[in-house]
Length: 91
Image (tube, rainbow, N blue to C red; front, side):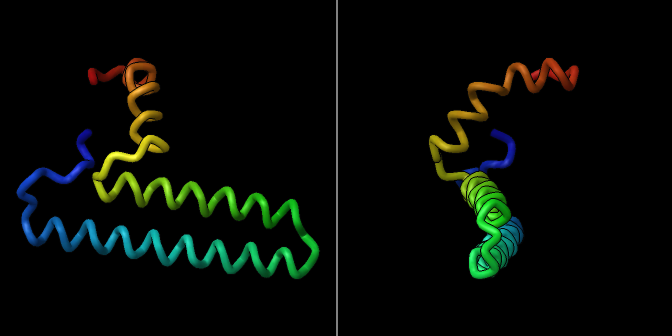
């Protein structure tokens, strides 16, 4: 996977990856807080959508770390050929 960190990643790249992870963490926190506010307002369906968005951000975090996670990597592996076919590129 191209986004996975190599075994010996430069300090600059590690710092960038860490910043991306932290930004995603802040976004997930914001979505969690919004979902809680929506629940308090009685807007359960909106809160559930916000929670689903938050879970998507958490999946992106797993991708950024480069550590295998079935929720991410198994999906990427299962659909990668179809993705590249659609994009007209080689895997």
